[in-house]
Length: 104
Image 1 (spheres, rainbow, N blue to C red):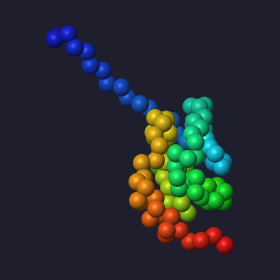
Image 2 (cartoon, one colour):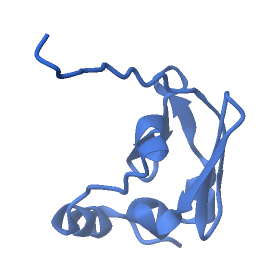
Image 3 (tube, rainbow, N blue to C red):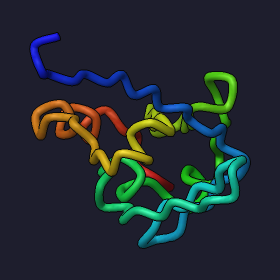
Image 4 (tube, helix red, strand yellow):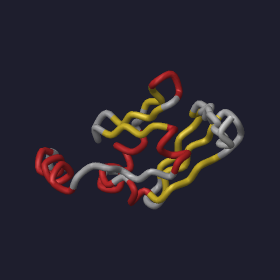
């Protein structure tokens, strides 16, 4: 051997069991007992959405993701565990805002 060590790390992701979105926070309960809470500002579409739109979600991807149909937003457990914010560009977000129907 040449004296170097290498290791392979496998990240076993837990499934999502519950989701709560408030005006300030996205909180996700995981099957391993953890709750991950992140600022809703990390996800502009959630931050911009109404309380009703935020409450209408589906746990998707066999429990590894969350989908908000009215907001066209998808967030995966891996990104939450790793602390990743939305990577949507300002141009894309602006186009999305312009396509939204005005609320009555």
